Amino acid sequence: MTVRTTDPLAPASLETSAPSTERRPQVSAPRSVREWEEETFLPDTDVHIRVPARPLIPDDPANMERKLSHLFTKASKDFGMLEAGDKVMVCMSGGKDSYALLHLMQRAQKHSPKKFEIVAVHLDQGHPEFPTQKLEDYIKSTGAPYEIVHQHTYNIVLEKLEPGKTTCSLCSRLRRGILYDTAQRLGCNKIALGHHRDDIIATLLLNLFFCGQLKAMPPLLRADDGKNVVIRPMAYIPENFLIRWSEMQNYPVIPCNLCSRQPDLKRTQMQNLMKDLDRVYPGALPSALNAVTDVKPRFLLDRKLFDFTSFQAGPEDRDEDAFG
Image 1: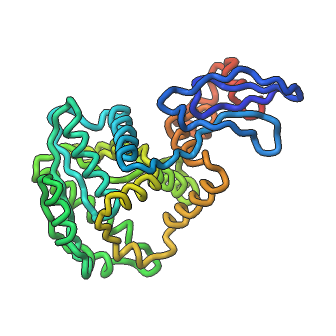
Image 2: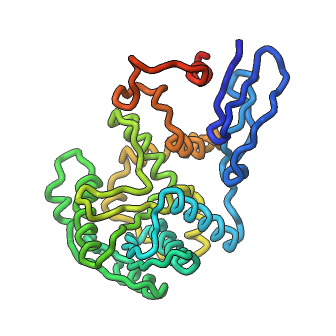
Image 3: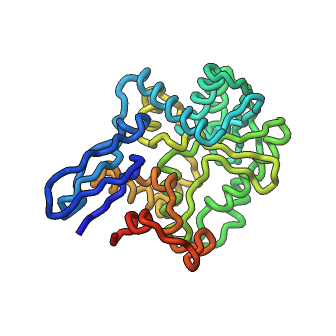
């Protein structure tokens, strides 16, 4: 019997025949991901495979900035996020991710041959004791054009929230509508959000386990209104990089009062699950991100994506089957 496994990063599959111990030559992964490779064995087998490894966190701030910028630029290029003439609204929440987003957007603005404008925007939702001035002072210190939008949705969320429901869904819908309108008013054709790799994976797990859908966060999304384009340039950046970068930069991180009141959010549970996976299987999270870039409709169950009744089978169909 021949056991076939697919390397999630390399362009070709690796075959290992049992019980022979002879190892076939391995095909190197693309250079951009080679540093994320490690060798391992499938559990309880002698099948040798390559998997993405947990990225090492740089200790030096200059190295960290280069790594963040590399991942930011790669995602931007892969999905065509930034083009000459764009005016991008950079959403600033006061969390660590939004600070990093503004820094990387300004860095890209300085070094990219494609000239674009940015404007930092914070939506003041009326959270009690939220230190808006602290955030505004920081944005001023960066030299970025900015605007503080005052729309107190905090009380609306608490008043309209049904018993037992989380605040996030309603809060997000209200915030999104206000930000879309603000982008149009400011003449921005794109809205940059600070979601990172782990946010995308957590969303994938939430949809998989609780919504019955194979869906994550798209790095580039054209809104239903046809006017706004949402981009997530930090889609490739692991959260632990951003945590360390925030510590290095001593950002004035401001937590969300609404979110912190809900310790049992399913998203928090998924984040804890991801931490457990990362601890036991160091390559699990990089592999999960790669999985949503390499979809095989033939091996799913969505009849809208693949016609199971009239396809012509080939050798690759058999080779990639789990029981081939």
